[in-house]
Image 1 (tube, helix red, strand yellow):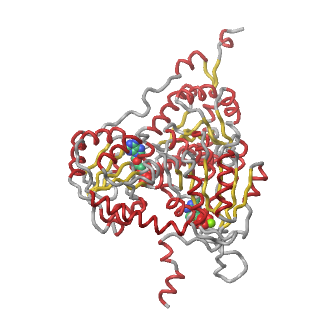
Image 2: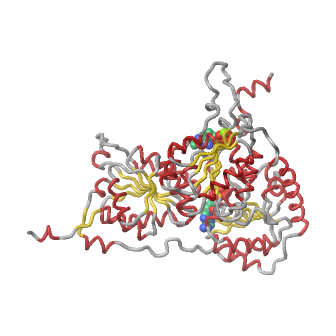
Image 3: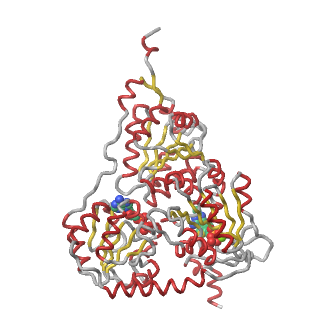
Length: 571
Ligand code: ADP
Ligand code: TPW
Ligand code: MG
């Protein structure tokens, strides 16, 4: 035997697995195939958890949501070209939302791919990924794996989090190296999410401005929820007595029934406030870009806490930028605000009074009786609200149009990071992936409130929920269509309208086919008892919530531009 053949070798799979573990990765979501099937088997053999999904987009959504909830990037693994592209949709969504995740994909051989010679699943994945992720790297050689994975993880979690794409080249995946040399390269990165302290001058400027306010307001965004400094944020708000407005995924950071919550009176506080402290939220479309009628046509004095310097002044001038991580910024601000008198009592009282009036107006609509199978969004979600109040640990996943808007308004959250929704893009299709990611990392029940259209984008992954026996209850708000189910074809011929589905679909039969529990709720009382049974049982359950097909309104101001409406207006 020659000395060469005696050298013990390590392969790229082992190097990858060890590197992922060194970076705190415990779960992989994905779909196997050439050239990563054996990688998944080895991952399981080495004690890693793997969640095999039915579509890569759902696997990537699961990874993104897991990253948001834990601060450790979720990992999605895909096969080349089409598998990769499906996964990229979820990675792009994670980047847009600021959630840390890593998309790992096998790739065809570089030689053939770069010459476009027609390799199996040939695609220039690195360049396809680049515009949609925070960074895209390719690992071309087995010895680069430890650095490559550490670089991906650090990029995903530091600064504004986002998705990182890692191209696992065919050349690398088929590589081996002497084990002793490979082991020397493996390392645990030190401090992947370093604190980023705000500048003392900036802290003073922000504190002075806040102290000068007559009608101060705090806006909490999902960055504030992500930062996991819940008690400090609560203390800042309670010590200063400033009312707060939670963005949808920041609901529960302070409980929705908190006396200072201005969530129910957004249209009052935004125009009225004089100084607005924004904590981990962007002045994007969800906040009317910080200007216009929503803000009383008057530019506010903004204090903005964000880790990304270029977020400041992105839409309107920011009077007091506070660039740094939220934990450090809140701590510094609290110190600088010590002894500050509480926010003016009349401002808070005016808000509390209006919030109570808004609740009083909503309450009877939640209790309205409807004929069996003719529920509306108010009475059905009112029932959901009352059940979920008893199980505050439940993560709520929410998407759709009416299902989303009403869900956000009606269902209260009591704990941080317990709400996941269509997010910054307003996308449909986060549903089952989000349920999987949330159930895996929290180990607590998950309830999804899904528009029937929204559900369709990820519905097949109900099977994954059943297969892994995840404690997920999916409620389909079944009004038979997009916005409504009773629209007729404007052309007058027999085909369905663009927004309607087959009437009377029984989505509950679908989960039964997979071996889960199906239920059909026709009244709020049925929905209430079925939902409670499902949550308590921790069994994968799908409740078909039968709504009036006329329930719902079309969302979007763009409809004002419709030719049809213009014609009507002209007539
Ligand atoms: P929402 O949709 O709830 O309004 P956004 O996703 O628009 O929230 O904004 C979240 C903001 O929080 C982003 O601008 C992001 O850079 C910022 N952010 C995220 N994590 C941190 C952190 N740890 N420290 C400071 N800023 C953060
Ligand atoms: C990836 C466009 C916005 S809302 C919606 C669609 C298709 C569905 C609304 O119907 P649903 O809800 O879910 O039944 P409800 O309660 O009002 O009846 N493709 C993607 N994202 C978006 N946002 C769309 C299409 C859209
Ligand atoms: Mg619908």
